[in-house]
Image (cartoon, rainbow, N blue to C red; front, side, top):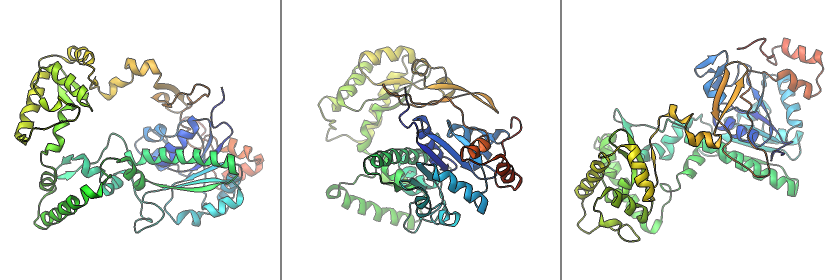
Length: 430
């Protein structure tokens, strides 16, 4: 079967996470992705390399691409980059606003070379505003967007961001890939190319559909009152932990937290996620705990309920779970239609039967580091082939092939290499 993006050529000028993740998604859908790296390589190659210029960080977000490294800041390198764009359908960049113009890689310049070009520009904070020219990474955006605060995780007196994955980076990559495919579809109907702007900051706000939703008739007064109280607390020298407790406390609004959490069992842990009262009743009855708040269709707290009542009820759930092992609890909860899973270690995921049954972890042979196992494309299509079991390219591995594809002769290729414009492929592993 054909892949959905067969024949689409993408020139990728991105580094780190968001841009490479976007173009990896396009490669999974069949696009030919030519990754143009700086002469010394994508900075992500240098993050704890395991062999030569290969790192887990780089390998994880560059599957299915080809690599050519060159100095695009030189006239000769810029000419090669422009020749690549003339053959492209899509260009993706993640420079700070203003830098593409200096490099001759701005939308106006490239669109004049390639009519109908889809040009996607990812940035940290967006093309306008007081932060537009600033560098930015996922952690900074978590701090600026409220994600870090809403997580309520504190170490040594300060908030801690999400570190198991990069929410702003990855969601930006996904939003950008989504926008590129939409723009390609529009071009098929109208013939028009266009520029796409996305940012880590905009994506971080967008994925917080609950915390960043305000019903002004209900929330405005409470928000302004809270902000005034927070300002006063800061002025009085309150610590972040004091402020967090002041803002959230225990809160009856989180009374349902016992139905959406991890519990210790006799031997390990179980995670439950009950988002309606039918499921909550199933959990309550399976554990033999009394909670009349879940009897009806809507969660109903009694008028006399206090934070202490909530703590006592939570303790009764915790005590009940300790009576059995995880393997004993799972069939009991499943029979009660309670959404639940065991808590597993990352190392256990690779060979989990659910992973194996769906082919979620793929094995590939990397030319430098050998066999790698990593998640493949998480999408299936009935009439299209998606996902490529092709590892991330080794450093500038496809430089000569790419230049030949552009029609360059061997003498010109040799001159570009000798002149320090294009990195030749490594002679051996690493």
